[in-house]
Image (cartoon, rainbow, N blue to C red; front, side, top):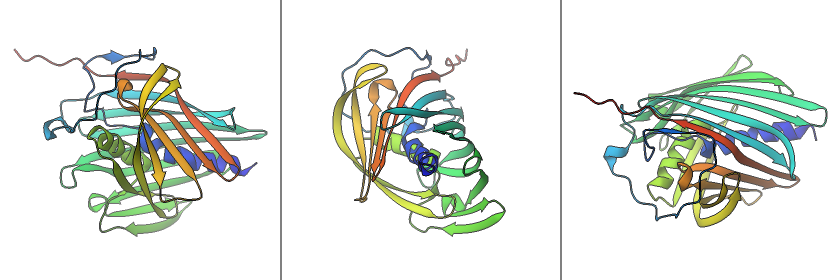
Length: 275
């Protein structure tokens, strides 16, 4: 049971592949509070023209709160705060996991930006601090447009490199996955930077499903992790809620975890009129 917080924090990294999102497409210039949004008709995912890709004129900020459950029991929560400045973002994560007498807290700060050369998001750096069980600090920097990374964990340094795809943290993957879904892509894969290694993850759009959420019954787009026979990770995105993740489930051997969106705040500044 003491391994559960460790696995849960590892899953937070996977869940956040989809939780975070760039705020530069299909977001109105208004404030969307945490009140439930009525159900709406899901339309086909349309390709987004290049002019709607990240630009310097959109500075929406987002706060997303999730609860985490183990076999139906509430064991913790995590919050994601995205602060955008044009095509750059600072992303702050706070997470707490409680299992029996075991308690652990995680805080993380990631930085990413849109790369015109790669036409995708890339990670600049992240810092992670865990207190309680599995206490420790991890920091990473990414160079050469994501081709190289350096990770320092408890004073030990490791270097990694990739030639075909950029090395990303979960926050950059999250931003890119959401954009891929909005553009109508059906398959995507990413190289995720772990504290001691890199892992290649593959995902596939399964289809459209209507599910019960804290915001009512919503039509969603389901995405599953593939090419992993020993586990099952499923993610549900709601187009009517800014294409945000509203549910994630993970099953593997004795683990049965679920994360659900419980509240949100999306703030976009009003457009500035030039006279």
